[in-house]
Image (cartoon, rainbow, N blue to C red; front, side):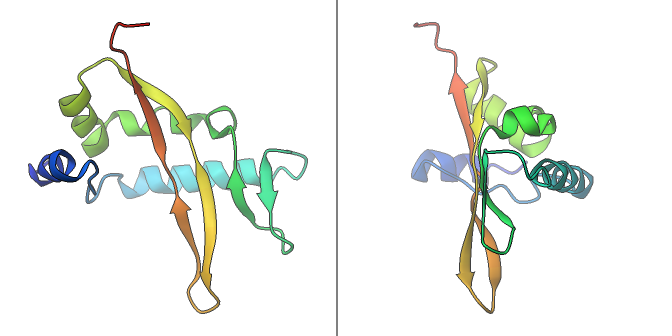
Length: 121
């Protein structure tokens, strides 16, 4: 990983990591999310009038793969360098927002919220 994400993180408080997730993992995550979103009885999903899921809660419970995919590769490396070993995943947010009829839908929030164990409780 180049030092650019670290420099951006230090300067801006956030950074973009190019090629952060390999295509196989992306495909697995999409498949897992599609399977979870197909459950019409789940009250944790917000659906449009046309039936697509545009928001979901408790993804860590319904898509277990989300608990681990970020621990390796460029994401895991950056987190380890910045936070040390005392961090963990708290929640995952998924929200799809309509950007316009021509561009379709785009994920507006696919956040990972992390906690850092500072030893102070």
